[in-house]
Image (tube, rainbow, N blue to C red; front, side, top):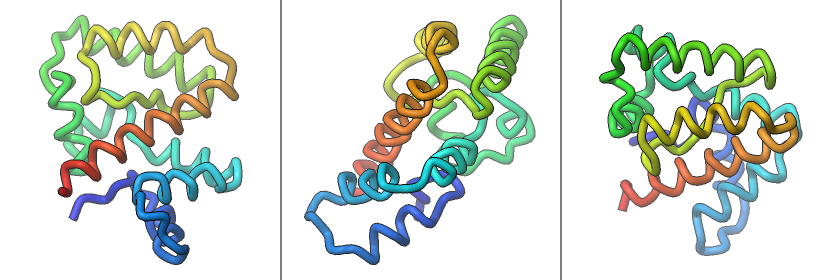
Length: 146
């Protein structure tokens, strides 16, 4: 079974211990939104960098590997790889966590453009954006399970 949240089983566990609204995605995201700021950051930090070390080392979760491959991140040219690496480093230095985007809803060019644009955001905006993107990732993973 695919984990819905990267290395963060606590989200599903908490959602499972609460009354269901009948909308699993909403129930899961309510847990995330009600989590402490530290827990939210831990959830964000549990995600791998796009085209990063875990991808090169082939240590991505099965779901992340498939998602990154769907956007062509497993087939980057040397120039593209260098650009991803530089943007990942700049983003992590600025915000203290990896850039997160639902790669299944975009492509390499869209991801690079979003990375560049989101570097201009403040940290609070990026935390909210990362959580929203995690929500999209989880929504698609839930759809895949149907």
